[in-house]
Amino acid sequence: MSPALLLGLLSLAIWIGLLLARGGFWRARQRDDRGAAAPPPASWPGVVAVVPARDEADVIARAVAGLLRQDYPGPFRVVLVDDGSSDGTAAVARQAAAATPRPERLVLIGGAPPPPGWTGKIWAQHQGIAQGVMRGIAETGEAPRYLWLTDADIGHAPDTLRALVARAERDGLSLVSLMARLSCVTPAERFLIPAFVFFFQMLYPFEWVSRPGRVAAAAGGCMLVRREALERAGGIAAIRGEIIDDCALGRALKRQGPIWLGLTDRARSLRPYGGIGEIGRMVSRSAYAQLGYSPWLLAATLLGMVLTYLAPPLLALAGAGLPRLLGLAAWLLMALAFQPMLRFYRVSPLWGLALPAIGAAYALFTLRSAIDVWRGRGGLWKGRAQAMAGRA
Image 1 (cartoon, one colour):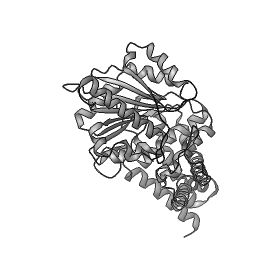
Image 2: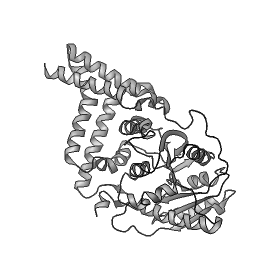
Image 3: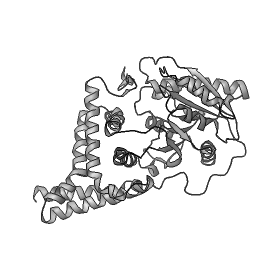
Image 4: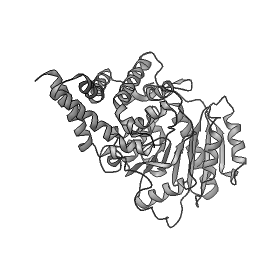
């Protein structure tokens, strides 16, 4: 058997396996607007939204307005933790709250610097949760049943919280998480953003996440957490050093009860990602952490990406005979697998043919992530190098 024929067989087998035996991740069917809507509970439990914010003045007004305009019928409060911002984030948030019908729902606190072993975001959430629980007990006599962990650059539709709580109550969930729709306007975003969600679903098939088993994940932009389940898991401190904190929280909470993760149009990213370099930095911030900082897993991952994404077009364009046909077949399968996500993001189906180039870009981002860690700049976010913080 020639090397080219072996390469073609391996690449085609990989894509057949992904399509048939990876939880149908590519269909993008796990969405919060599919199936029967959860009925309203007999009574609406208390909820506290916790929002860590560090230098978010450009988006915080829209995020705060979306949170304060929730049509949630039960007790609800928003705790915004200003995590050492230098751009006037807190003042912008106050001004935005004053323009809403319910400005009293907002509690703004200044966050302390993170102690050793904590990432900045998790430490800010820890402070916000403590403040929210304390306020809930003082105002209603009991702690809130749910904590809504969301980001300062996410905008929410008015019914987002009501839909989250209804699903959690109906299904007895420890965690309900929505993958916010990311910005996909510029050519660079159309090139890389749908694939970001596609690859995330490949790693963590949403249908598997929502079933009993070991696969667990969450999307950090929107996570409704049952407070008692979080406390049983050791509190937010249980993931204090995690760079990929949302998936770590998903794993911790799945051990306490069922969880659910899906795509949505209700939650949207408010910040455009700009060019390829900016998106690459977003990916590189956590890619090596996903591999457990292992150089061996890094090498295996890069080899796997070559076989999965680069070999098919190389064989299709430069091969001959059966290896060329195998490369064409694998390339066609990957293009078809990408179509549901492209439709979700409303971009041209022709981007499916570009998936090999997109995969190559993500391979380079992954390699860059490892190099950043080796240089002591891993997990860099707004001036903080946080990679391996949990090992401090």
